[in-house]
Each structure stands twice: as structure tokens, then as C-alpha cells.
Image (cartoon, helix red, strand yellow):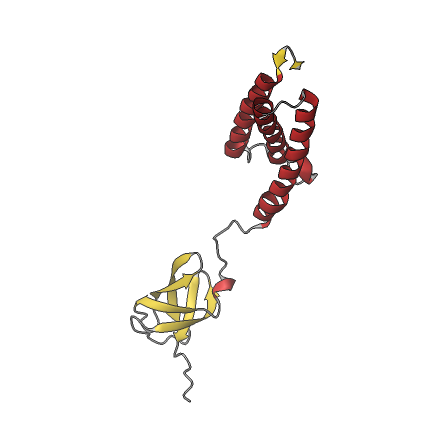
Length: 177
């Protein structure tokens, strides 16, 4: 069987190379062409994956089996549809809803415990480091009641105003049995 004057095996290979190249370009430059949510199955990543999978399955079946051209095309379309659905539901959909930001808000720092790395003088500023899931954050800090707090002390963040943490000395509660 021939398509566009090419043997099917060669047609599948050209389609595989073309769809694979478009997929790679989409991975690198897809954010530029992003048109919004729309209909999920018209996502370019899903469409390109479908054509790449059809071409790959078709090429392998043409090269290794003696099935007719229409049987190979049917099997490759069906196999690509199943694999494309699995790709969409188990890879693309969870990735689209994953949190992509490592940023924090000042309100999220309230109630956290940090460690003083630059001593906080009375009526002055020092520096506190807070360990979060995304790394270490160091911020300017002052005593909540303008008290002095020494280096290496643990502090509790009470308030955040104008980028400054207002903290109090923190003593963890230990229960004795």
C-alpha cells in the first residue's frame, strides 16, 4: 500500500520525524503559543503526541508484521488513542494542576519559627532565617515589644509589616512524663 506516492513504512517514518520535531519545538516554545485552557483534547501537546504515536506504532508494525496497510493503520490509531489518553490523564492533567511557584507570601510566614542570625538590638533591626519547603528565607526582623534578642535564638513570627518580621523569643514546650 502506498500513500502520497510513498510506501507506508516510509510515510510513517517521515510523519514520525515531522511530528517529533514539532513536539520538541512545542516543548521549548509552547508558552509563547499558549492560547488558554479551551477544550483539553485540542491541546497541542495531546495532538502532537497522538500523531507521533500513530507514526511510531505504524512504522514498527509495517516493519515487523505482514499485516495489511489498513490493519496497521487501524491498530496504530487505536493504540495511539489509548496511549494518548493515558498520557493526558496521568501526566499532563496532574502537571497542569501542580503548584509551579516556590514563592511565599508574607502572611504565610506568620506563626512560623525562625532563628536569629544577626542579633536584634532593642529598638533596632536584626535578621532572621526561616526554613521552608522551598529553601531558606532570611528577612529583616525587629522585636515585637522592642526587646533585644540574641544570636542563635529561636523566634516566633508574630506580625509582618512593610517587609519586617516582628518576632518574640520562642521556647518550645516540652512535656515531661
